[in-house]
Image 1 (cartoon, rainbow, N blue to C red):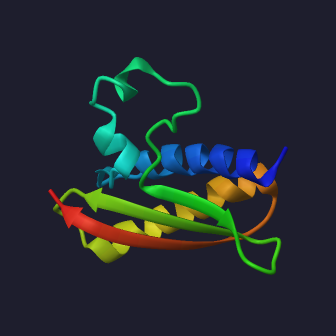
Image 2 (image 1 turned 135 degrees about the horizontal axis):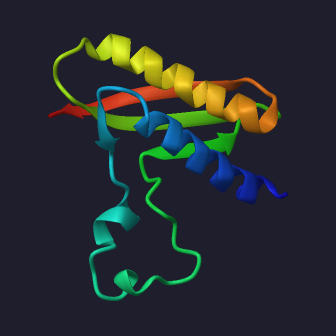
Image 3 (image 1 turned 180 degrees about the vertical axis):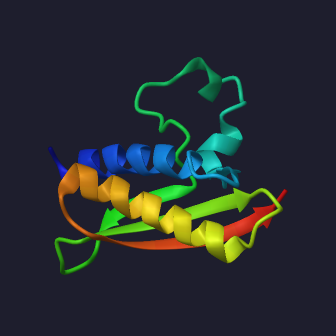
Amino acid sequence: MSDRDMSRALADAVMEAVLDTPQVAFLRPGLVDLLRSSALLGRGLPGAPKGSGGVQVRRQQGSAAWSVEVHVVLHRGRRALDVTREVRSAAAAAVGRMTGEAAEVRVTVTGLV
């Protein structure tokens, strides 16, 4: 499996793990997600990403380790710090299950609803 295919598979796994974390409302939409409602993209073009705009996975430069960035919007009611820690753990566990390797995970809270 190429790094590009592995990145996509990891992004999907991380996305599912993050969305299953309590207090996570949704992932910050990426540009493709925002444009998806247009008639052209709504037809389901092949190769179009499936909504993981809030998760980016790539290899760290000069290393075999994975780097994960997650941008989330949270529900109010709990400290964002606590939820962020849970999101980071869920994302790292998802990468670990698929690769057997540790990953550097950065979580950014982009809003509260």
